[in-house]
Length: 135
Image (tube, rainbow, N blue to C red; front, top):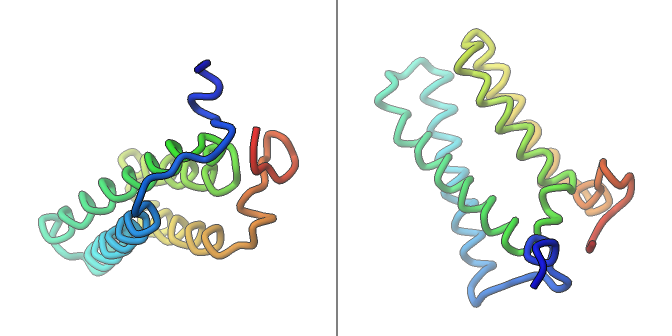
């Protein structure tokens, strides 16, 4: 198998129970995001919301790995690009702490918009300027 097909298989990879694993991972991600958001926005001590941050990061990374493993095309579609933008946005918080609240809210807005957008939007590749379902 060549390297290109390793990342962009002709047919999407799957495994038994994949749908339920993704649902569970997204549910954990939402719990973590709610805990971080609530704790952070209402000024709770750091120790109170750090476990939720860890849950958010671990579940988000799990979702990311499943999506990229299924087919790397995900990363060049709007849905993957949105995740990279959110990661960049939230990573900057270390340097620009005054922007923490707007960055957190913007990250949630991006998530809501992209996850509920029609397929024409989610599967669009800004690099190819068209919807992509396969490479």
